Length: 251
Image (cartoon, rainbow, N blue to C red; front, side, top):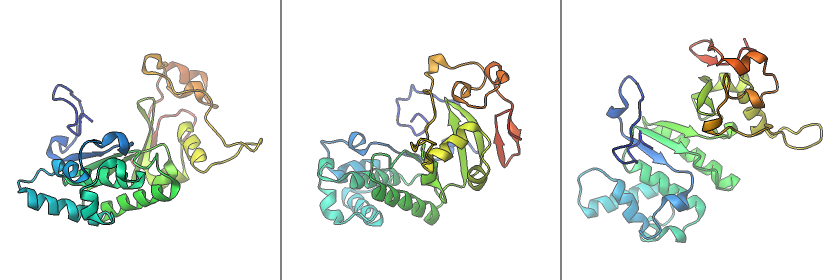
C-alpha cells in the first residue's frame, strides 16, 4: 500500500528497481469490496475521486460512464447514482476495478480480488483482468493462494512463504516442474487432490507469526522432506535466471 501511495507520507518502503517505481502510476484492487468502498458515497463520486486528469465534472462523469461500460457493468447511468449496498458482490468488485483503472495506472496490483465471490463470478473477474492486460500495456501483479486461478494468465510466478521468496520463474515452468515443497503443495491444493482417506489434501501445521520466524528455511516446520540443515541456515538459490528456487533437496 505504501508503494501505491495509499498510506500517509510518513510510511516508507525500500525497493530498488530499474527504472524506479517512482516513474510509474500504481493502482490497487482490494480483496473485500464491501469494506473498500465508502458506504456513504455514491458509486460515481467514488470513481470520480480517482481520476487525476484536469477536467470539469461533466467530462469526468462521462469518463466514469465509459469506464463502467467498458467493464460490462449493466445500466451504467443507474449504477453511477447507486450506493455500494445496492450492488451485488461481483458488481462491487467491478466497481473497485473501475476505481483502479480510473487513475490510468501503469501497474495494477490485485490482492485476492475474487476470493469472496462464487466460482462463476470469480472467473468472470479473472477473465476481465486478462482482457485488460492484453488490450493495454499495463502490468498486473495478481496476489493469490489459488495458483489454478492464474493458470494461462500469469507470465511469471513468485512463490512466497512467511515473507520470503522461495521460488520464482516462468509460469509454465512453475506449473510443470515445481521445485520447492511449498510450491508443490500449493499446486496439489489448487487441483483438489484427495488423500488415501478420501479427504482433501492440506498443509499440516500453521503459518508462523513474524515474531516466531524460525532459523533456516521458514517452511521447514511444515515440510515433509526437510533435513537437519534446513533448520540451521537459509537454503542457497539454485536453478537458472528463468527459474530458481531455495531448497537443498531439488536440482
